[in-house]
Image 1 (cartoon, one colour):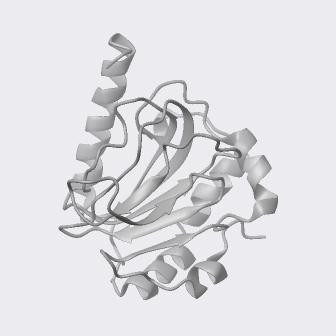
Image 2: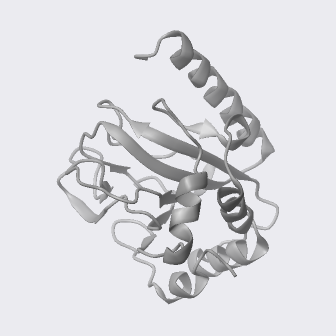
Image 3: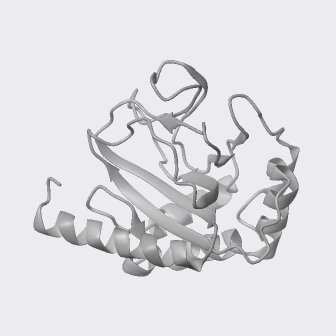
Length: 207
């Protein structure tokens, strides 16, 4: 049985203000959450880590396999009106948030679509809720706020004003980031960058 709910994804309207995005609260089947949670990579530090650098279990691996499957790609092509055939994917995972995370930013032009899938079975903090922002100068001017609760998906098409960010939070904050990107050169460059960042954090833990 599929662990992702593409029917709910298909039924969720695409928002277009201030940019193209949608939020699907139960994108991952609720019955699958506990097994995926147990098999989620144990990440002790802040930062994004490529999956090949992490250890995880079968349930998490099955989720990733579905995310990279053709049904997922077809659903996103239809929703966003894009041809993603032949576009590479890039997946990273996070486990912890630090105080400097969440600043207002836009993704690089090399990313076509960004997908964030949250995997926190409980969320009590006021911060850490990603906001779809109307500008690059205020966290309080937002169109939507996403609680990082397990199974919730936020997806958006990257454009010149797809700004996002969140209020400060510190502690465990699990999120899978999935991107379709322009070409394989982007994947190679991003993997090098993440490897360097991971090395830097191992040498300077507060970095």
